[in-house]
Length: 174
Image (cartoon, rainbow, N blue to C red; front, side, top):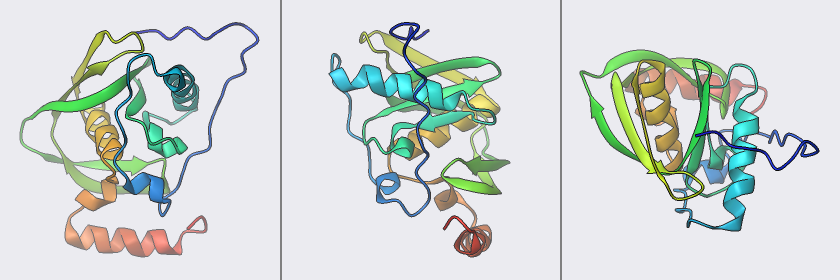
């Protein structure tokens, strides 16, 4: 599912990441209609932005766009999915160390399923299915949560969530 940029003169469009507290992160994203002219530019921006070092996934609302799409960068595989649906999770949820570009500098233990599968489409409307375990499973769950208007800290255990909120409120970027 490679995305071809429009030409050699097209600049990379690395977009700024919206941070915790921005209302766009708490709103469910709207589906994208196949052929929507905004979709190609959005996917290009998502693909460019997720390639920055240390990034595993990026949801459209994290760059301020309330449309249902995300990009991923896992183990050298970079791609995207439009209108993703978390179609399957399996296994016993386990505690994993998780962070988020919209909550920079923090990692907290939260429960995630060890396997996940997402279905959606690409820019041409062709079916896309992504699945995996480990980091891929975590990213698929994390990014679809974003598109539903949920941040990963909402799924923390109560004491960990209290600790997280204290730390976030004290962060210089908050």
